[in-house]
Length: 143
Image 1 (tube, rainbow, N blue to C red):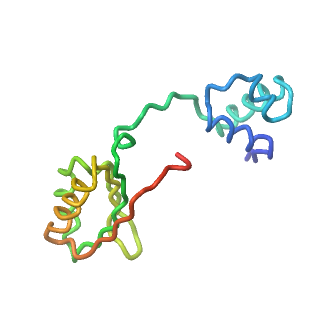
Image 2: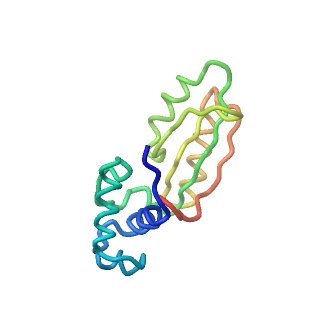
Image 3: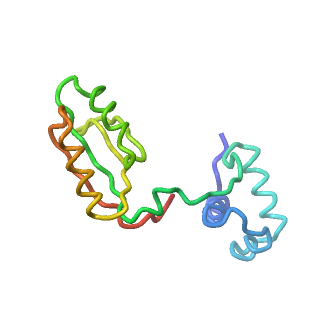
């Protein structure tokens, strides 16, 4: 199994920030030659560390003013019914089952605090949801 070097890790970090950065700019940033950057990218790709290059587009949830993560506790065997109801909420961008103290985790996005408050009221009103805790997402530092 290939283990990325420190240079590989710094290169991957630079590519995460700007996957379209020119080889020359990457080489200057990392303090190595263009040939070294090209070789490292080739090696990382050949070993399956880098699996592709893509463009990122703005996620509609990013445009929303209020983003949050809600942790939800479900009563007994009502999880499937609760999931079915939550699937109908357009504000829920992703819904995950989990282990530990919470049964579900919902990633949400709302236009403003009024809509966010209404979403929480509707979620808490679903039969089978016995507890929830929601944290606002202030900024995304790694995606």
